[in-house]
Image (cartoon, rainbow, N blue to C red; front, side, top):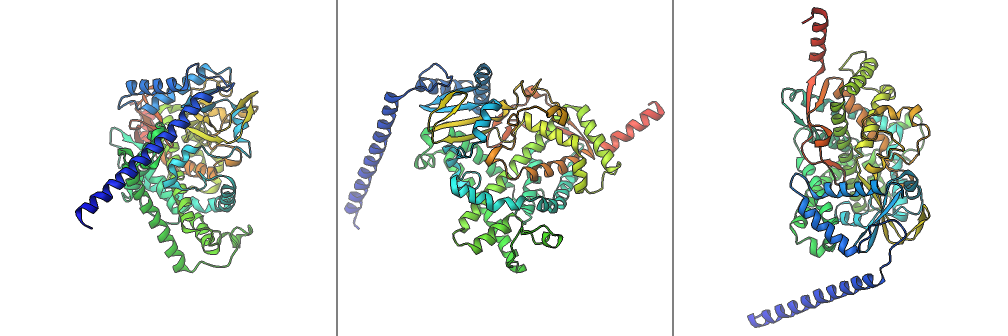
Length: 541
C-alpha cells in the first residue's frame, strides 16, 4: 500500500467514525427528548423540581462542597439520609436521576415487599458495570441462571462443611494476633488492612483450598486492586455518560479500572490453576455424590466451594471455565471484603465502649477458664452469646453492604403507591437500621437490643445486614463463625482503644461500608493490664 492509498483509507475510516458518533448522539438525543416530552411523575413523594434541573444542581452542589477529606459519596449518603428523615411519615421516597425513578426504601414494611418477593429478584442494571470483573455470577445473575447457581452452591455452606473450617479460622486469626503483638507499642494502628489480609487468607484457604499468604505480605496488590475497582465503580455510577464502555475505557478511572481488573484476574487464575493441579495430583475425581448424606464416614468426602465448581465443570460441559471464574471472583471479593469491614467496625465500636468490651472479655474468660491460648472449638461458639450480640449491633450501625439495589421490570404496589416499571428500588440499609421505631436510641451502641427478650415483636425486616428473602446472603453463617473466632482470639489477648470519636469518623458507601480516613485503634496486652490491676488492688499502688 502506497502513501496516497494509506491516507485515503485513513480518511474513509475517519468519516465512518464521525458518522457513527453522530448517529449515536442523534439517537441518544431523540430518546432523551422523548423522555422529556412523555415524562410523568409517579405518586410516590418526591422533590418538587424538574429532574434535569435537580440532577445537575445536585451535581454542582457536590462538586462545590466535596473536598479530599470529604468525598462526594459521603455527601450523597448524608443527603439521602436527610431526605429519608424528612419523609419518615411517608415511609417511601422517590428521586429522579435523569428521568429514571430511584425509589428509596427505608422502613421495614416497605422493605418486606421488595425482599420477600420471588419475582423482584433482579439486581439493578448498575451492577452490569461490574460484569467485566464479576461476570454474571451469583451476586449479579438473575432468573434461571441465578436459581441454578444458588442450588449448586448452597451445599458448599452446609453446617458440617463450616465446622471443618474452624481450624483455618483459628490458624489465620492466630497469625493476626501474632502480628498485633508486634504493634502494641505503636501509638495507633490502622486496623482495616490487617483485617483484610486475614479474611482474604481465610476465604482462599477455606472456600478455594489454596493458601495465598496475604498476611505474610504476598498478593497485597489484589487488596489494593479490589479497593480501586470499587472506587472506579462508584465514580462511574454517578455519571451516566460514562456507562458506555467505549467512553469509560478512555478516561483515567477507566484505565485504572481495567489495569486493576488484570491484577485481580491474575490472582484468581492462579488460585483456580493451583486447585486444579492439586485435585489432579490427589486423583479426587471420584464418582461420589457430594453432600449425599450426613453420616460421619461421608463428611470427609464433602467438597469445598472451588472443588465443587471444578467437579461440576468436568461433569457438565455447559458449565464452562468462565462460569467457574465468575463464581471465584464473586466469592473471593464477597468473602473477604465484607467480613474485613465488619471485623474492623466491631473492634472500633468495642474500643469506643470499654464497658461493653469488658463484658465480652468476661464472657470469653468464663468460656476458656482464663486460658488465652486454647484453640476455639465448635461448642465454644454457641456460648459466645454476648459477642454475637456485639457483632449484630455493629452490623446494625455499620452494615457491610450499605445499600441493596433491585431493578423493577414490572410495576408493583407498596403502601398504596404504584412503583413504575424500570424503576431502581434502593434499600438504604444504614437508614433502615436506624429507624427509632424498631431501635430506640438508634445512634447508641447497645448490644442488648439483640437479646431474645428485646428482639421479640420487632419487624422481621427491620434488620437485614445479610439481606433477606430468596436472595439472602448464602455465606452468612460462614461470616458469623469467622467473625466470632477472629474477635474472640483478639479480645482474649488485647484491650482495644479507639482514638477517634464517632462524629469524626467519616463513612463512605462503596461496594462495602468504608471508612474515609484510617480507623485508628490502639492494642494493649491484657496480661499486662491484669497484672497491673492485681498489683494495684493488693498493694495499694
